Image (cartoon, rainbow, N blue to C red):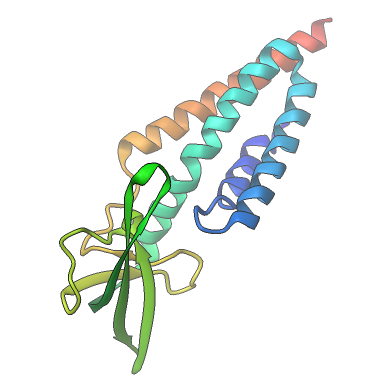
Length: 178
């Protein structure tokens, strides 16, 4: 029971928006963890813990990405090589920028989507800034500033964690009395 928050935090890293296999693996592990915790807490508190645990995973993954990018991300001057558009579901238009930069004497290229900073104003040949993860765990982001973990997100994750732990404690104490 004490490992539930740590396991859910680890699972939240397996939810990248562009890798379907990892997304399904993370979802399956999350369901297994939450069902096991639910069974140990009982039906009432277990349902509350599972709902908060699901929300915790949704908030913690992006929060960890922002924190890691702020701590160890490296900034490079880059050029937009190509900008392409595509149609998403429901007729919305998405954008992908092909960005080229030079680091350590090597030329690097990355595809960055509109969710990671490819804006409508970007044109081929524009100068921009790209932030990369030296370890290669996180996808590059466009923009001169990496905002890092906002205090609102940190408080939300902390509140969800506290609520989840309260349901776990209540469920375990209630089952012990019965």
